[in-house]
Length: 114
Length: 116
Image (cartoon, rainbow over all chains, first blue to last red):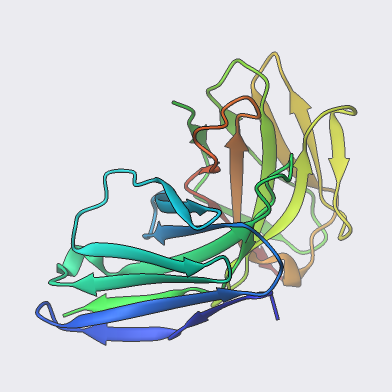
């Protein structure tokens, strides 16, 4: 148990579907992140929420829409995705006051867009 | 913007042999440095980190990394690897003075393949 839980673990969706990824942490952290992990590429930061407020968007296409209703939950809403969006989506959390900003990661959602 | 370079995408090594995974970063200002490990079908886990003080940091499972400011490097080493060390290893950096970007910048990863 890593402390950060992501659901579902696997998701296959068509390009016209709408789905959501969920992330939950009970570590008392106040910052949460979405990263995209594609093969042979660095992890790409997508969104950062600190104290439930989005502080960085990082130029992510609008077909990805984050939501952070409270400090323990983070969602990534997906619609009209493209095949190149297939990847492992990782959620992480940290304590924003943590000088070392160590992250706790979830196990990820493996997304396949068909 | 900061960047992290992990020159080796794959490192094959025999069990009980030493290994070094290389990491270089672009920033010339003070930085925090991290190594994360990702086992198959899992998320990333913190292996070790450098914040300040001694330039040599160690993990509980025998890995160590040395911060070299002049060479802007933070290479990861282990004197004797085990089969169970097979995983993907990610180097990451953050700028302690950059309160705006509160996120880590990761390298592309190095896959360590330990062979019997």
